[in-house]
Length: 335
Image 1: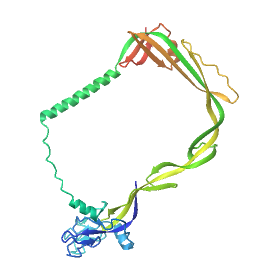
Image 2: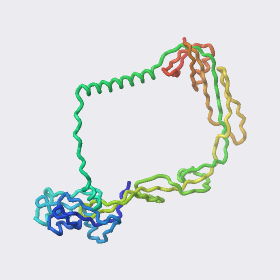
Image 3: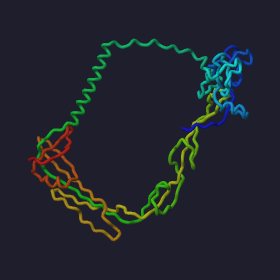
């Protein structure tokens, strides 16, 4: 998702020494003078709406980066400061920048979390004995061995000598005509030379980046801590892109009929095709079925190999590769 900034709002912090609410940018308590702790939590003032800041200086301060606490006296300094404003210490030598990016709570949310009953952590359960662990490992290995055995049984094949009882075949030829075709597609996917009849703006895809013809869809706005005492109001947004989906026509070859020939011998033939002036032959398909009897069972083998099929005359003997489910995987003549 794309992160969108709406504006900046003032934050407050509550002095842990005297419970006074202080403006976020103020670095010491306005009541007792205590310095702002390094781990203080900034809070959102207005819970009903965003009171956006119009002071450009405050906005620039929030955009500069998080404040830095002096490693010597703990005083909070702007991100651009090199020396501590209180003790003059070098901030580059261990100065701690405030954490940023966390979601800012409202005052009432902070009060509720503080008032919530403490959840006691139950004592951890005693670990399993070595015997129980060993038993578990053995059980897992047994399950794996069983699964492997089942797979091997399913994929294992047996050779069976069987006799052809009967056969069947089917051959088809598609008939195509050169005619006007009506279709639908996105405007940039329509083939060249097509006649576009009408288009409608339709949802096509969603992206994280702004696009032309896109509708912005954003989640609920919330406040993030910039580490300066000023909050950044942000939203997570995506963009639903709409595009022209069109009806169009073009001249092309389309299937208008299919001629089929069937038989129950080993001499398959193609159907006779009579074409009109604007027609042509399309794709040809062929399917052959050989039925066997062996070991008291019946088997069926389907193929598109005409040469193999013509060898399978009724009464001939074959070697079948049959899996445990009774499916014929391959066949070859019995010598």
